[in-house]
Image (tube, rainbow, N blue to C red):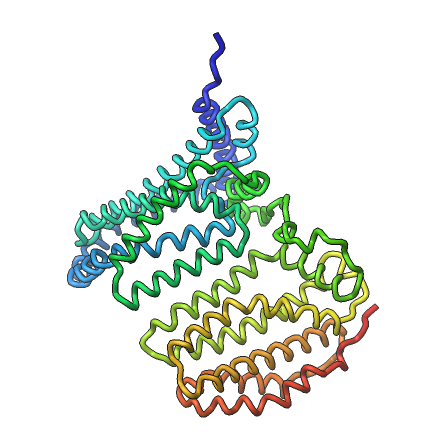
Length: 469
């Protein structure tokens, strides 16, 4: 009588061998940076850290009233946290399938082992690891702070519920196109904003709770349909073996071996390629941005996070400072990306028509700025005054001026021309200050008119746009 092979035993065998390999890597890393003398000092240090926990607990006892306030807020905001937590998983779905299903698990599933059981075991392992981490954190919160254990346990259970219920949606969202994920993300942001505005967090919490349950019931029968396994295994392998501190010790960086491109499923990429200067430059920029997508996402994400948080601060001027910083940082960063393109790959040895490159680059600059623009427009829609159109005009023209100054400076450097941009940098600083000042005195936004002619000069400053052989 034939028996089907045990998926559980195969999974344990895989995990055991992976753990052994990782332990060897960790051991080699520790031996590189820690000797016997350092180990003795570290043991003493950890002893002091352990004792400091008890001293720290006595210090925290003096702030009992503050912790009581935190406990009360935590109890009241529980439904709001339920509606906020799914945002984290939708955001992760852009780069992470939620369940780490590596190439090893995939190869096992090709053999006579159940793919469904392997996936469930992997998902269960992830949930148990998270539960262990939350339990340890909750334990220290209970013994070190006056916060009631019932509140801590309720939050651990909430995190556990969301972790379990968002595993399948994140897995399926990871397979979808980016705009579907973006729509889901925007919908949750709007839902959370609406719940705060109308002060109906419990009702929205119930809606989200019910929605998550129904979505899981709907997606469960189609869990393994239309799955991009090559992409899943690629990301999972990178997640498992990208040990950052080992990379720091060895001064090497673990790079993903991409088996796909983020542009490969676009319909126009399947059409015959037209060999024109414009189309060639656009394709070169596509390849460059695909390779640097992680850095670009971090840049835009950091600026976006700043602009989302600042409106909730009590001082209005902080938002205008944030807008000025976002304009300057984004303009400087895109110019750095522009220069970096000519120091890598085949572009470094090709003739450069910098004017044409700059023209084709601007479209990508506009696309990248859209999340920041939407965030700023949303802020001004809630704080609309008669000065708002002029303030927006000041922000736009300031960015355009800073962008063209930074780009022209980069082009001059690439063309190896000794050109000073002293006056232009002073004008950029003035634009920066005008954006901030318009938060205090809106009439300062009239200063945007001053930049119309200098901007026109920068746009048509073709003296630096040389064909470099």
